[in-house]
Length: 449
Image (cartoon, rainbow, N blue to C red; front, side, top):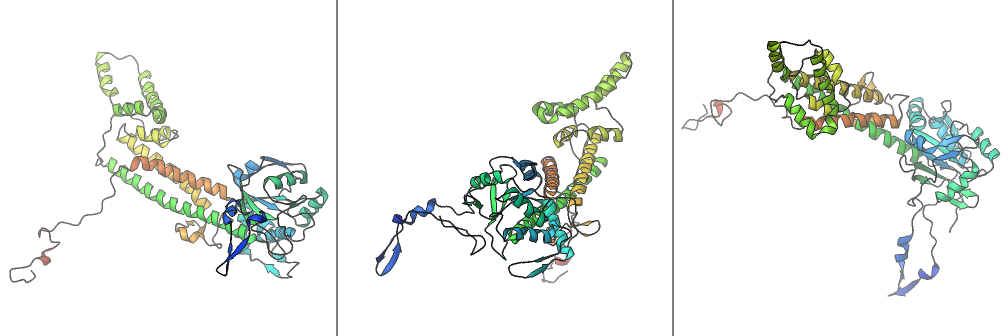
């Protein structure tokens, strides 16, 4: 296998090792042809080689346990591999990341190989600081002695992130297929999948003056802005759903909403959908039982009146009913109770509106804002590093909030998808029949009236 040093020459992308007897040429019509190329189908590039971490618990050079799975769940877990402790180019990547945001006090970087000086402005650093400290988490794999690795960690001021124990580094290098030699690794930037612990390369290779950190920053920016776009779209859909529920409440109050409210239909639906409506039935029965047990033994006339009343659902004050229905965890149970009466129907709508607004507030707090308290609803605007973004909400938290809002909207849509769409105000019909106005009528002499 060919071997390239990370400090000299271009970064390796394709490594081939194949038997020479299969690779030969012959001349046909004065044109050389390469024969037997089918065997190349079995080869893989370094970027397409499947990789996976063999364990979810590691040790750093200080003896601390590193929970890989937990970190991958909370962040973009990024593996930074070094060739070894003697490589002069690999530690420069950490200095570059410090300038971009890992170190809040570092705003400049001077490349010791090209002697070029780089400086970052405060606005740009604020954006990349969010990406590098809240969205991403780093683990460094460097072969060598613990003392030498600890010295690199101190000199690069990368102390907030673990440097893995060298005894485990070589084992990981072999599992990740990054062995350059018995004591060296291929320099790389890789990401760990949160579910399967598979490792996907962001870039493999490094050399003086070219540290390929832009590949990492581009990936982090794309993921955050994509979910900010998802959040902006979800906010717009949630606003539309709130308006739709409000209109249903108004129609229900005006008694212009044609819906069959029947307590019997509630129990009928409960029998066919017991998994989703058990909570609704229990709460309804508890309300009925409380009402029946709280009264004294009635006489014959009172019993007849109560039998007639028991056929209708027991009416609670709207505030108390809202509080009771708010404890139902899922939308399906609320929808089941909405069939009880108009009061229940309106209360269910109010509960769903409240849940939408709660999730909307959580998503709004995680989205960038153009001006204070003015969230970015245009999804194309999120690709702007100058927007004011929250400092303490990372990518995973943003993702979870957006998913919760989208799931709530989806569950409500299962109920409202059968609702008739909003009707537009129809123009008054004209006496001219199919014509829109009398001006379009013509007399026998073909003159406009």
